Image 1 (cartoon, rainbow, N blue to C red):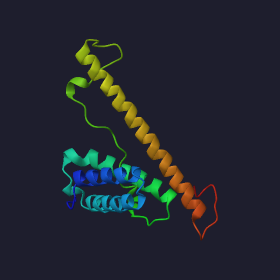
Image 2 (cartoon, rainbow, N blue to C red):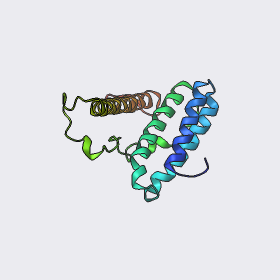
Image 3 (cartoon, rainbow, N blue to C red):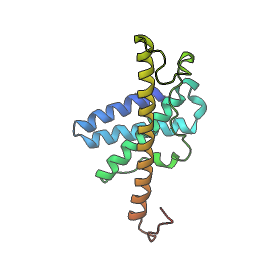
Image 4 (spheres, rainbow, N blue to C red):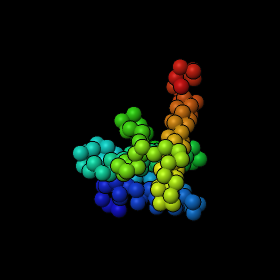
Length: 160
């Protein structure tokens, strides 16, 4: 848990989610802040992240941002600063598929083994689209709440 790696960040955010659903939000926020710090170090030193872990790191970043935004909407806690990297981090693309998975179309290969493989790919694509939609909605909500609760400026449609 003290390492600054993508896998360590994933473990800490999962522990944070566990505490959150046990109705222990302050402890969850503490672990979430730890995850945020790990990710900020990794973003600053992106050469430390091996190629095979980059997509997982992207997903962990966006999950951390979504989770922190939800917590901050409910409780008056400090921001970890992870939102500052929102424009630097790419959106998740999906994990690379095996070479033999390419070229699948509906209705092809209906035997049991390949049919299961095809179904799992479709679920994976749907899950990615849902995750991207959740990211887009959260970014929009963050902009709106920032515009509403900002003290020194007036709210205009252009600022959103």
